[in-house]
Image 1 (cartoon, rainbow, N blue to C red):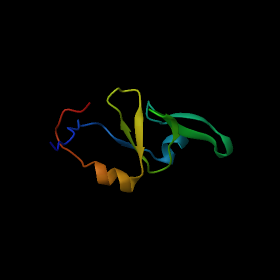
Image 2 (cartoon, helix red, strand yellow):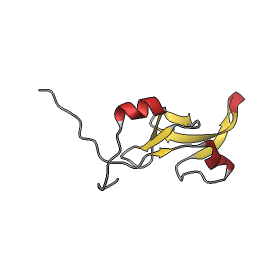
Image 3 (tube, one colour):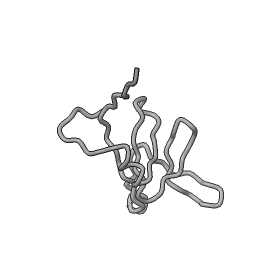
Length: 88
């Protein structure tokens, strides 16, 4: 039997460097040192921490603790805007 995963509606945020410059990071984004990159915005994923870059989309996991990072091109392949639905 072939099946399709039912996906919930979630609130995605597109990270912008100005968020860091204006000290206005989303609650799940924090700053930590990255070897040769210096202090960079970071999220928790199921695989550890991941650096976030300008333009990346951040999507929460259903557990509310972990997040997924997508480049804009990949985000557009997997997600589409929705209107007036319950958001997790």
